[in-house]
Image 1: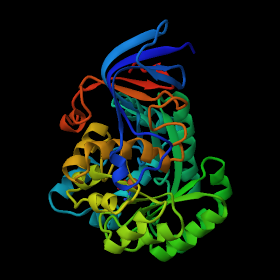
Image 2 (image 1 turned 45 degrees about the horizontal axis):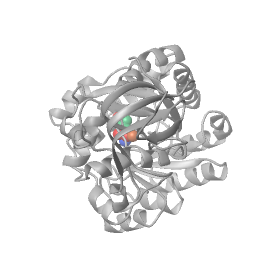
Image 3 (image 1 turned 30 degrees about the horizontal axis):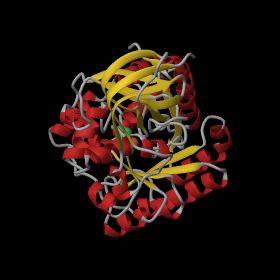
Image 4 (image 1 turned 180 degrees about the vertical axis):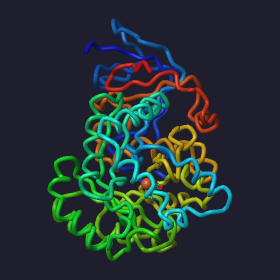
Length: 398
Ligand code: NIG
Ligand code: FE
């Protein structure tokens, strides 16, 4: 690929290979009137780029967003549940009565890999258009090993055709399959971890009311760690169960959701290498409370942002809307949201050496904006403000 450049009236980016903790998340680099010179990788940031093909002159350039938590691939919608919840039923009531995650499970079990790819590819394109250049996807809607592996295969097939990078997580323990004993099911998953390893080295579990207990998670995650998996937890979202503390104790890469964590949980997370993944779009979508992002950051935690895009608890995947909620509801600064949604979320996915900031040596994943300031991104949620997205040095035509 030949060298090319973008002239940015303003460039804003976190720096380094992360993770960035606490208030340091505000220390972003701001440059004006610079050329970013790149091929597949960023080669230079300069005031002058003689002889280099200048692709565009843009108002604002940021790193591509890294959405470190989604539930792609899923199949079918749950629009009726959304209406039921709006009329008073709770997420857990719907789950316990066999709906919720279980209703997506029935659809995913029936779907072929090709159908999963066809259904989910448009979402990945939509996210690319909105500035996401790396996305995490996970299994969790199979709830039996073959269907779980089918989802992981679908992610591999999606990677062949998607315009953005996909990181894969195994969430076989997303819910307890209907009519099964939780421990017996976890043992089945555990005995298949070598097969899972052919697709991913990250394991996640949903620890909460209506899902798995801390004791279940301790057993399963310890086994996964012994097999060399990195671990993550859906933690303390609906009830405070102690899942975040377990994550810290076991050296999880992240604990996600955290709506119900307490002061001592915050302290433990803040003095660990475990990232706290905030997903304010889910709180918004479920009309729930928000995670204590401000206290986490003020205590020195590594805070990352994700969308949690899924067919049940949140269908929002637009980074500008997630950033809007991070600023207005989580009380994060625009600078903190940028770091959380780029470099720190790249850290969660284990790719912060390669992406998450605009610096020489990193992959050329960037977003060019029609607006002139970082603040304008959360200020204009869900508006058509992305000029174009650059992935691996290519301007995406979407
Ligand atoms: O992260 N909390 C559990 N799992 C998902 C929801 C999945 C679904 O409802 O389909 C979440 O919010
Ligand atoms: Fe989730």
